[in-house]
Image (cartoon, rainbow, N blue to C red; front, side, top):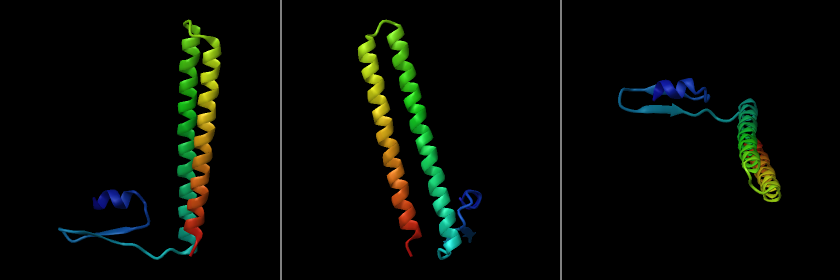
Length: 107
């Protein structure tokens, strides 16, 4: 546990006494807050990349189905639905990241 916490580079140093692993969490400085905001932004970007990947996979499957005899009208509607859903969830991620950045920077 101690090794994993140390390797995660969380800015927390674990102390192990053989029975208990203790974590001393330093107070948040301006620099640490900015690092957390950057990490939050990076996690938001990773989430959006995952959503876009799911969108791409879904549209590929719809195109395969249309190619194999599925109705083109329904296929187009499904592609639009997938696109709208991905836009909705990307907007949700953006809003969550914005809200979390505000929380982090508030003293």
